[in-house]
Amino acid sequence: DTAVSQTPKYLVTQMGNDKSIKCEQNLGHDTMYWYKQDSKKFLKIMFSYNNKELIINETVPNRFSPKSPDKAHLNLHINSLELGDSAVYFCASSQDLGGGETQYFGPGTRLLVL
Amino acid sequence: GQNIDQPTEMTATEGAIVQINCTYQTSGFNGLFWYQQHAGEAPTFLSYNVLDGLEEKGRFSSFLSRSKGYSYLLLKELQMKDSASYLCAVNNFNKFYFGSGTKLNVKP
Image (cartoon, rainbow over all chains, first blue to last red; front, side, top):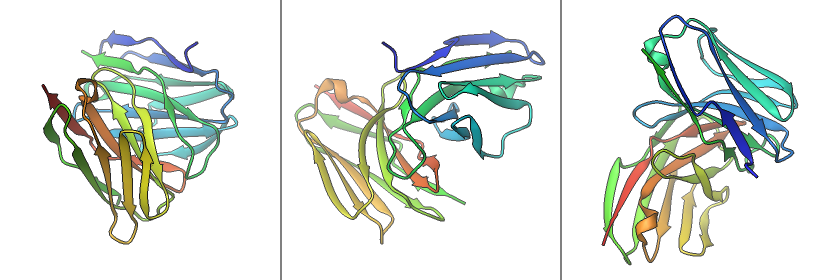
């Protein structure tokens, strides 16, 4: 069984469109994250949620809106897509917040904005 | 700001030992992680250090010196499947800051 799953795996869309990426974890973890990995392979944290509450909201354009309907799900909606949004988006989860918590990553969603 | 530096790329021979270094400057520190990421795949956890010293896990070891803001990942008995990117990440008050990763090429 996949621990952290994301859909879709690939997303190709036009500039200006609105799209959503879904993430689910079946590990029973309390904390979930969204990361963006750009072409230079930097992984940058975007958001984290703990028990459905937003904990971290990095400097991300407000076109990006996360939603956590329950502890096991964290979705990412992106409005008015721009060329610079092209990247791989990874969802991750950890048991809890805290320094020693290992993160488990989903397979990634490869977004290409044309 | 937060700064994490790793070499961009390294090459080593199958069966050899390789050390991948990571230096960091962050406003806080709650631990340092190493992740492995094969091309086109998700990062997977390798090791965690929060206290100074060496942590050994099979063929992989990780070292931390908090006073120097320095860590390394040591891979022994290299195998072809170890060809991947290795990401250093610092946890700073529930935020994870990742380096850009070191791409390791293992040659026969």
